[in-house]
Image (cartoon, rainbow, N blue to C red; front, side, top):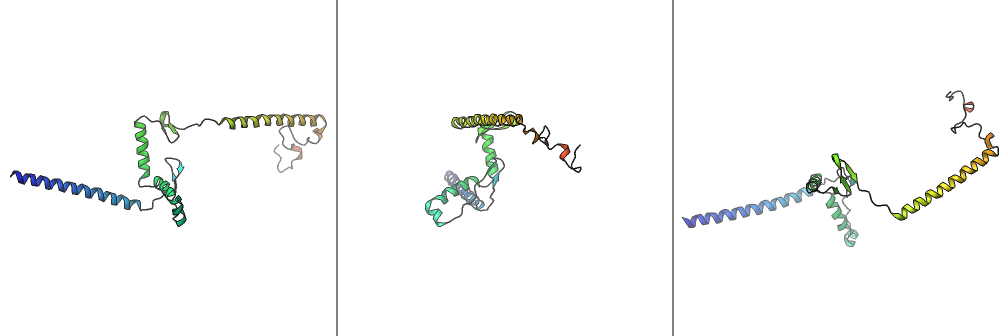
Length: 178
């Protein structure tokens, strides 16, 4: 009687192992087959970025290795129920206390804020230099305009009113705005 129970137990364990192995193998085959279905997206609304597209297969791209690099990017961006996985990843990050993901910070009341990069000091100096150069040129233009006004150039500009528009007397009766 005891031997029969042991034999039944061993057969049950073997059956469970075979069933688990078949289920695992079946899931792998099913997922692989579902991945073959072309459900490509061009843009991710959740991440606000364009997604990689399927690379063109050619012998030269395979030979130089660029096809595999592009295909890896494509597979990272295009897979089954991608938005679900991205949402779950973001929720897990929030649960562990992480407030930044991909350069975006989560603020109060679910506001999403973009990370601000530090300014490049060389570019800042260049812009400030251009700004001061512009101010110098603007002063020169203003002084020339004042000199022209003093020299009697007012007669040439008398047809314009103070806001720089044509004086009403020069407009035809059809576009007179009174």
